[in-house]
Image (tube, rainbow, N blue to C red; front, side):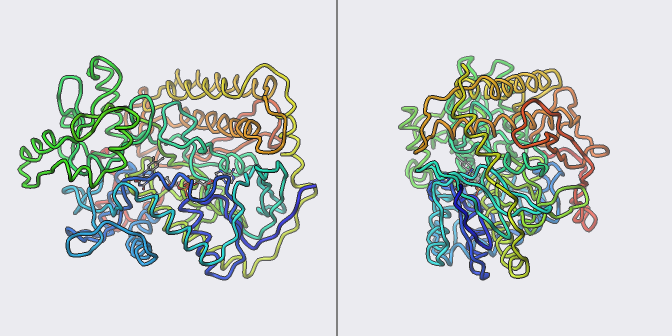
Length: 608
Ligand SMILES: Cc1cc2nc3c(=O)[nH]c(=O)nc-3n(C[C@H](O)[C@H](O)[C@H](O)COP(=O)(O)OP(=O)(O)OC[C@H]3O[C@@H](n4cnc5c(N)ncnc54)[C@H](O)[C@@H]3O)c2cc1C
């Protein structure tokens, strides 16, 4: 029998979003537990390099309204504009709060938080790039994570580290907790709660080249999807333009913020062609597509499938002079501002970025879609914004849709702290008045049966074979560019893999303690579900917008497609065998409240 625990509020995930939510729920008086499969400070938030955006205006004039405008435009007009406005206006206070908690931001000469440029962030509604990204060298996420973890410890938040949540418990139309497997012992635990917030991060591991950690397998999204919660806008998955060639490790946009430029095999600064005004600092979807187009035309370096990112002072200073800027950079500036990037390149590539350009290619990076929520982190299940009692989500796994079809750099860290905080606050109030809804009978039964099926399976297919095949299919057919024929083939291939997963699997480790073989196989099940429904969502949307670029529907279509996709599981049970077509709906309208007040927010042309 699984051991049962009871808490007012549960937070699943200890990245930036989870920790902020836990901190605020605790401060609000709730009895809170955080459950995390990783030790908290190993969460992916800790790898975020470039910065957190906030219109502090420390180096030049800036306003939250301009930040909201960039967010909506960068999101190719699919963002819910009220959410983008909340993001931009609460960012300012949230960054100052982090500073007061002790986060060691870089400083200007007069002691203010230093800020740098980032793709898509402009002043005065697109006029020119603005310094908005607050940073702590290129380790901003690391500092946020450490700061928030210390605060949680200070406020006595309870942590269940290295517990992997494997199922959501629903009863009487509400979320009443989760089932988790204790990794060290293999024991199942049932967590009973009044409110549960999912902050489990993204699922970059669906693709073969990714910036995401091995742990980013979409567990939370899959666990709620299997229990009938729809997922929103999955077709919008961002490829970051600058991953280290073949490895996918991220090179922050901060490199281009400091003046770095992209160069093709002919030695051209090709972004001048694709975004004449904002060039290398165009939004990520635009730059990733430009790189693919260059590669397709045979303009890769030495004819291969990569281009250069060049931040050597010679090159940068040449272009700064051409642009009429007086600023110049030196080798020691690069060393000081981008220490981790230099380390990565020196260690993994044997390339020294202060002297040589870095070989890069687009890398799967960020899920704009996820579990649909309102601006208080409450999960909503349909076009009428019906709230699912007791369930919350925040951070990358959530889709409050402040990022729309494409997220701007630095806006995820903002999203974590702004909406993590809102979710935490709301939970604290909610649990004051809500009662515990009883647990259903045998809440861990179904997932226990699935775990023993995987453990005792005696087929021929190893999980890694399926994972590699899925990643290849998705990279080739549901990547930066897509078209119907390729997506249809991807759906068929992934479904075939799902059948092999159900009927022909085998794992080596049959034990219970630290059985990572078992958990990786379970995670593969989550990835396969997400791959399938990402492809189905992509096939359904017959237009190009943001990160979703259809070669057979090249134009953005605001008349028919300014709507969110909701995809819902139709299988009779979470682990039902067989393939079931999900239900896809597109009747959830995009909130256009700012467009109604200010014509600058009206979608007139494609972004850039
Ligand atoms: C290399 C890299 C650089 C980035 N740089 C930037 C940047 O400069 N600026 C920016 O704004 N954004 C950046 N991003 C994006 C941003 O960092 C992420 O979107 C964000 O950190 C996600 O935070 P999160 O709190 O949602 O989840 P994460 O930080 O990913 O944490 C997920 C948590 O969920 C837990 N978890 C997952 N599954 C389970 C389970 N089954 N059971 C229990 N726990 C589970 C994990 O243990 C972990 O604690 C970057 C991303 C990457 C990959």
